[in-house]
Image 1 (cartoon, helix red, strand yellow):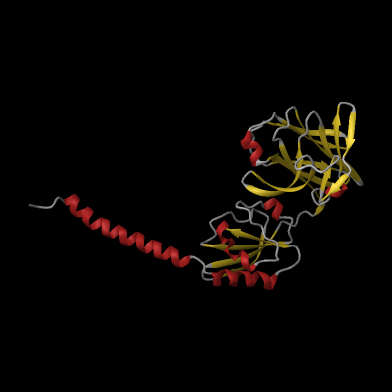
Image 2 (image 1 turned 60 degrees about the horizontal axis):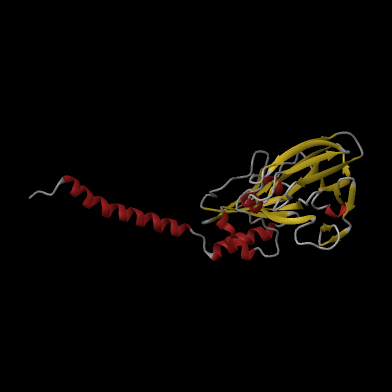
Length: 292
C-alpha cells in the first residue's frame, strides 16, 4: 500500500519545523545578555557620566543593567516619556536585541554610540532650541494652596515633605509632589485630589514671562479604573483670567498636554484649579513647566 503524499510531506515537515524552531530558540537564547554584558554597559555609562544625565532602557527588560547603575539617576518606566527626559542634560540609552522600542523623537541628537556583542549604549542630547525657565513641581514650596467653599477661602499653610496640607496631615487630601501610574507609566506629578464641596487651587505668583507654559494633566490609573465619584474639572488661570478648562469623566484615561504663551517681560501668576461635585477617588494630577 502506498503512503499518501500528504502524509509523507507531513512526516518530513514536522521534524524539519521542529529543528527550525529549535535553532531559532538557540539563536535567541544566545543573544540574551549575560550579567557580564550588563556590567560592561554600566561601566561605559559610569565612565562618561555627567551631572544632569539620566539612563533609560530599551526594551524595558534592558533594565538588567540596573544593579550596576546604583547611585545614578535612571528612568525605569515601561514607556518612555521623552518630554520629561528632555529636561535632562543627556540621556544614556541602554538597549539590546536592536532596541525593540521607540528611539528619541525628532530634534534629539545622538552624541555617541557603543555597539557591543549583545548590548548597545548610546548617548543622546535633547533639543536645544529651548531652556527650562521654571519647573512648577520642583517649585512646589513656592505655591500658594487654598480651598474655597462659597465665599470662604482657607489657605493651606502646613507644608511637610513637599506637600501642602490644609490643617492636619492627611493621606490623600493635599497638594504636593507624588509619583503615580498614569497613562501607561509611573510619572512624577503634582497631586491635587478633589475636595468635597470645594475648589482646590494651587497658585504660583512669579512665573517668568517671555516663556511657553506647558501643562500636562490627567487622572491616575486607579481613579480612571475605579469609575467612582463625579466628573472632575481642571482649569488653568493666568494673571487671574481663566484660559483653559477641561471636564474629565470619571473613567477618562490619558495624560493630556496644553500649551500657553506668557508674552512680555517680568512675571505672571499661574493657577490651577480642581473641583468635583463628588470627589470620591478623583485623583487629579498635573505638571507644568515654563520654557524660554
